[in-house]
Length: 238
Image (cartoon, rainbow, N blue to C red; front, side, top):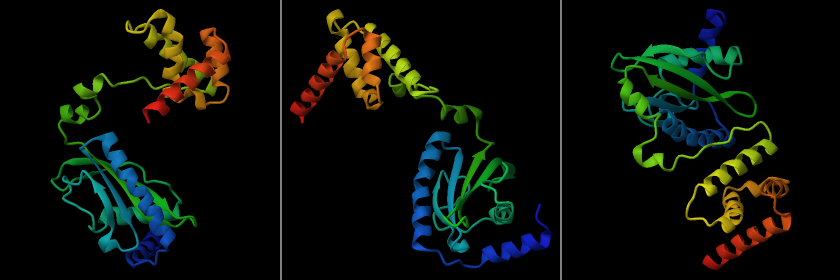
């Protein structure tokens, strides 16, 4: 841990306004898109805050789910974040250890702070994740479960170790999908499988056509034919 005098000196330095470059500001602006993505992932009981260290009195660039803390864009940096900064700086950490604190209304929160560094390795911002542990459990879990209208759109994601395994898993699942579809005639199943794989982007992978032709026991020429027909149909619609 840094000595107290060193931490105090760094804290005072951070309190001073910093001169940011345009590149620093552009980098922080790019991080702003993460705020909505993380908030959507973790739900309404997780506050996501992006800070700039250019001006600590006008620090919050973007915030999602800020109702619990009452903060909005333009709010100042918190004292907790200011205390974490010297640790991140002196120990060259990418993020602070997760810690427990209290929210504005006194409820428990679990928080983590990620350092946003510029190309020179200097901390120019903070991405803070604050999880409200006082939220009703059923509400918290509801954000992690599909809504009724989303259930039918749920699709399996292939977590594969290599490209060949990815293609194989995708082809096998697509074959099962098409074979289970009573609206697809038996003599049209291979074509529909190829079309479905094309729509999933599987043929953007090198050697995928050869792997698919082997799996379906058809020639590569036939796979190319189905793909060309699909592209032609799309061009006609356009």
